[in-house]
Amino acid sequence: MNLKDTLGKIVGWAKTFPETRTDEMVQLVQIGIDRGWYLNEVFIFAIYRDFQEGDDLDCFLQEQILSEWDAYWTMITSLSPDRENLLTEAKMAFENKLYGAAIHMYFSQADGIFYDKFGKNLFTYRGKRAKDAFGGHLTDFIVRDSWDSLIDQFKDTSIFRRMYNEVYKEGFSVTNTDLVKETDSIPNEQGLVIPNRHGVLHGIHKNYGNKLNSLKCLSLLLFVVYAINGGKTHDST
Image (cartoon, rainbow, N blue to C red; front, side, top):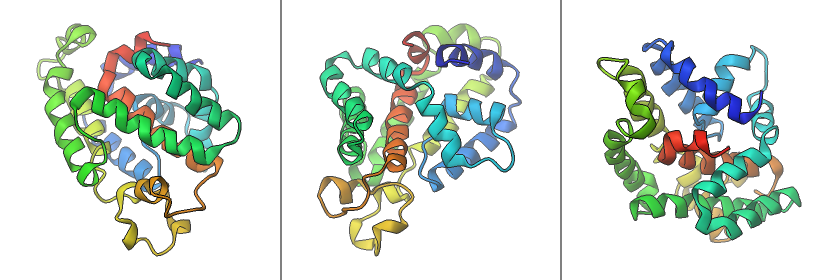
């Protein structure tokens, strides 16, 4: 199933998704972050649909990204066309196995795309300002455009309100993750589950440039894009 088909099925999936399971989704997002992955709605859908006991999460999520590699980049670029040149470089860096360079660009573009929307940096105060900015965005986000007709089907908007208010906001609660830890508190970068943004961009760390870390950092960029753009991501693949 390609990315466009998957996105189309998410709406039908959400219509029949038990409200109580949203709590499980929040926990799933936290499990992902604990492993260095930021789970957007497509990843969550794929995990519920395809992930089997005994599967390796790192391998599973790598396959999720690489199997629709071009489609993801088409979506990101179409939603941030003024960043096309930089995003193209970011994509090419990975394709040419320049994983360190790719990580630098994924961090900067996630930050920049967030700034374009809110006028605030994604990583300031270890993500606290980003969490607050996104939280203020949620009220408008769930009642606009293509979501209106769907929300009307739920008298208390339970599924979509909880999906976006709790699941995505959980992902923006980045204040205790390896991504934004104060570098002085990291005794050994080899123990990090995801590269530390400060350690990378300020040249403190040296051993982060590999394929797995690059894809984890791309998952952060995808998370920001999906969280901010919502239904627009469905129309961009």
